[in-house]
Image 1 (tube, rainbow, N blue to C red):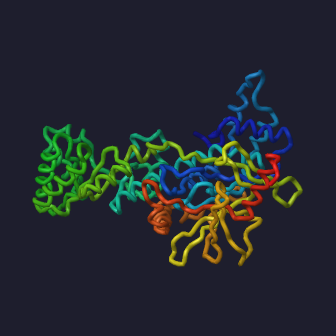
Image 2 (image 1 turned 180 degrees about the horizontal axis):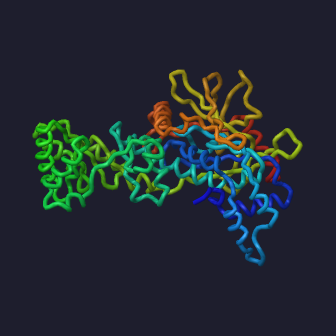
Image 3 (image 1 turned 180 degrees about the vertical axis):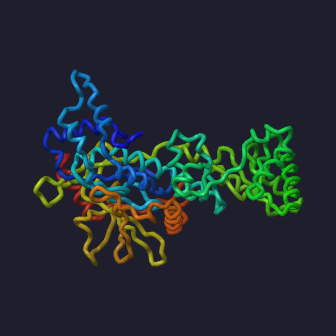
Length: 486
């Protein structure tokens, strides 16, 4: 695929032509990307996808081939869909929006902006679909990986999902899994492209291709004396462990070591206990046990709750596909307009019959406040053009329940959105593009949460709210749009 400009929904381009033809395309706009509810019924999400977003923005242009394709499209009512004027505009298109985003690995919560886009309304609109695709999907996978790794209790998790993932999206899913906490991936291309640790063992077909299991194990140990992990459940797990023990002793005589055995079927908790007892009895306490087979955070936690001695987890299908929730539900909403020749932004707000779909006006950012001991205290969504004064009372208001408020005055805070793309060029710092550094940021962010917010089920809700004056402004705007007295 030559470029990314057509990686969008058709209506983004028809709206762009509409802006051009109506003369309103030069109006400045502010859009925000966020999500409305916690993924996987958890208590947080891990932001991801900003690196791919920056790469796409850097190369965003319409080739002659792209323009020719758009020129070939017919309108349902007759004639061509796109005008010659609009197609000429695309030929000389230059992206000049400003994009700010939270760094990858940041712990984030519903209804706070992960990305802010400012520029001509036409260009901001054209980026919506691609931006949501990048950030929503990878945030979802990074969050799933984080939950699995939390359940694993510090034991390494390797991502094995390439073969089951949805197409080439698996490349970025593997990276997102490492951002979320996985120690490695089986995806070799992801390892090469993103500098990720790669790992793997062998499959059942390796064992089946030899006359017997012991011969297969011996051949694998000869081929990989410094990276040998044996899959023991092709025929019978107990016999497989016995054969692995035989090979392990043979390797020791050569000055080598069997790293681990892998179990991929059956009652994993019971089999892990049995295998551990057999290995220990054979004097192989240093040989680890790896479990795989359609694992997720709930099953990992259940196996550990039974006391299974697991050293490494291999998690594939249910991680790389976000099996139990295939979409984050990210949205991209217009929140402010600046008319040509004006200095001030005008609020824009979408009202709805559903309170959860009401948007927030303004040019928004997020302040994250901290207690003295380093734990997070709450997040404030505020308008950068009307931020609380130094020393002023800093209060957040729950947008769904105005009686739920929290005072954060006097606490240390940091502002979350950072420059990503400015004046037609990515300004992403090299350290912010590194998946392993993003993973470290995620670990630090999770460590700052209260343990009640890390529960896999029924976590305590983290306080996120609108700055009080912003909340009041929003309420007045809602009342005006609904034509009611406030």
